[in-house]
Image (cartoon, rainbow, N blue to C red; front, side, top):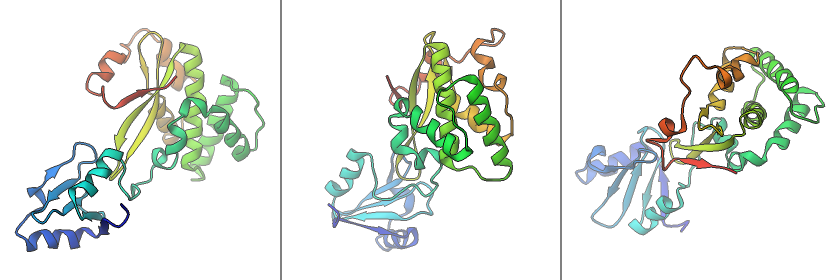
Length: 235
């Protein structure tokens, strides 16, 4: 399998297509990573990224290319490498990672909280916001904060964690959020990312809409309507 494909620069693949009378958009587009696929008359398959700037593939056969589709994994890393890429493996079992992330934050921030509570979470949040000003935070720090607040929201709402699958340049990544027992969705990832970005370190900004009755909640029914194949509920 390893020998049935080659990774090539986009310009080289584009020139090859032109040499046989094909244009980039003559192929079909994947619904996952939006890459362009060309099945050639000689049996080879060319894959160009949806960005049309990152390296692509030339595969010896359709069988070779289809293996990447079946495995939902191309042999290159997403070049963007955001927090959901770098923490991919732990996020797949996000509901089991709270202790790991608590220990990570304790070590990074020189704290010693043995339990997760709103009080300890607020200290973590204030520390991370302070570090953001100095540009010291890592992807793991932010995901750790999502895990801490996600656990508290789960406990407060008798909820469950779910992952939303989306694609980078090549491969899938997963964003964790919370579905409450009452059937609402709490987008804890975007809440934490937003709070850190805008330097907001208050519990109210995280928990307010969980109990606030004056605005319509985001329901699971509405949220999942067009995402049925992309949402993975965790126990």
